Image (cartoon, rainbow, N blue to C red):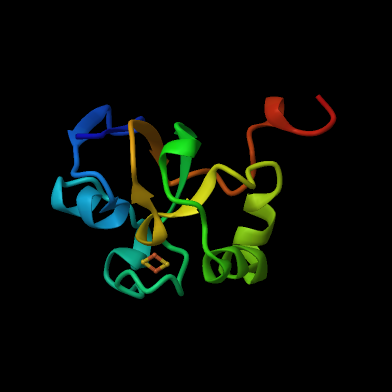
Length: 120
Ligand code: FES
């Protein structure tokens, strides 16, 4: 069974292969949503982008983003900028299936830390 490590929460969970990342996180008490999105979100239909995470390790161990997920991340004003430099890492948890061990960072920063910017 694949292991998913949630970096911010310092929590590792074992999930069945092919499991949905959002569903497994919520089932194991990992809060993916912040602010109002705890109560108002699209419930896993890939429309609100409030479940976005960074897959920091094992990007090749999760399903590839589909066309709708890519479009959602490209067309949203926040996600458009958040995606720059994180094209492979930024994912919607509700659209991500786990196929192997990986590490996930919930609540990724919208603006990257200064040391990660282009000019440094
Ligand atoms: S829950 Fe809305 S996009 Fe994932």
